[in-house]
Amino acid sequence: MSRPDLRACVAAILLIAAPIVVFGVSVARAAGGNEPAACNTTAVAPSKVGPRDRQALPAAVVARTFEELAALVRDEAGPADIELVPGVYHGDLTIKRAVAIRGSRGTVLEGSGTSTVVTIDGKDITLENVLVRHSGRRHTTEDSGIKATGERVRIADVDVQDVLFGVSLEACKHCVLERAHVVGFGDDTELRGDGVKLWEANDSVVRGCVIEHARDLVVWYTRRAIIEDNVVTGGRYGTHFMYAHDSVVRRSRFEKNIVGIFVMYSMRLRVEDNVLAGARGAAGIGLGFKDSDGVQVKGNWIVANTVGTYLDNTPRTSADPVGYDDNLIALNDVAMRLNTSEAGLSFRGNDFHQNAVMIEVDGGGDAMFVAMRGNRYSDYEGYDLDKNGIGDVAYEVKALSSELTESRPALKFFHGTAAMSLVDVVARAMPMLASHKLLVDPAPLARRPQLAMPATATRRP
Image (cartoon, rainbow, N blue to C red):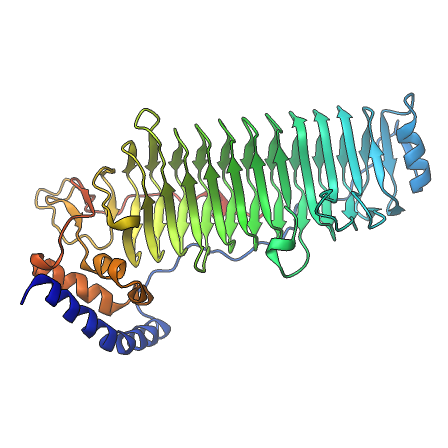
């Protein structure tokens, strides 16, 4: 029998046997099989973000109504510090001069429902300790809770609700958003506005925020942005970078979004110590890159996604390499998926643990150009006779299952099943069935590396 005939027979047997095996595996897991638990990906309660109780500054001027507040803000010779009492201030506020406006728990800036609630356009402006709610619903004008343009704007300890867009920093240099709680509205992710948006906001910071059920956290056309210590859940893109050179995203949790982090057309980005979990569905990706260079991915936990990490033409040249170091990539349907990436991509010191499929390469190619060295693989079947912690034989992915699913896409339904694993076992026993190698690590780790859990995995904001 020829090799094509053998493959056709294997595919036919799989279609018959897999439903039975799937049922058996599901029952075994429900009964407490040996599948390890992932890190805790339960969404956190935003107990330490948003407005808080505080003491008013003795020298500040107190505004007790929206009319008083608007008048003080319009006055070019007005006070540098304005205190707001607990209560509801009805109206859309515009701030154009240097001033610090501070409320307390129970202080509400409630918009008219026709436009942006708070518009900031100036330098050295601070807004703290308020709940902002009830913006307009126009996508054409991006009605927001807070929209800031200028320099050195600081927005802190705010709660943003019932708004189309949450907080937008547009042409806002050296601006800071911290300890904000932004909640999107509606059931349609595509019709929601972005929870936080940075557009041409060079050298700006988003820190310690909780963003729930909004569309995206956007960082576009922005250099040297710092995105750190945030929690983003239930959105489309946990963070979407585009033309965001020299930026960093670290110590953050991205849970149950369609995509955790996606990076496009960006150089010298650092992705460090994040948890990216639960990006499910057909488009689910924990961490993805397109046409990006000089990227460092280190110390992340990429867990329980449809695709753990996706790279499309990243890096574009070997002169600007992309490196994945010391990451846990576990329990994903597909650990790594590549599309037309070039040489210059490396994986070192990572732990690939119980992923259903190690690698997929679009277009039927291979990943032999990827520098894989010193990673640990839970399906490694080699040995370490000299006990130096390095496997004595190379780790190879030479998967008949990938060839079958490439030629018969309907078989992807059975990814991760014992039946599909059996196909690859047969291929290893009968090498003539698998035509080429997909991936090789010449020095696989024989023991699990001690990768520290990112602090954000257990921290509460």
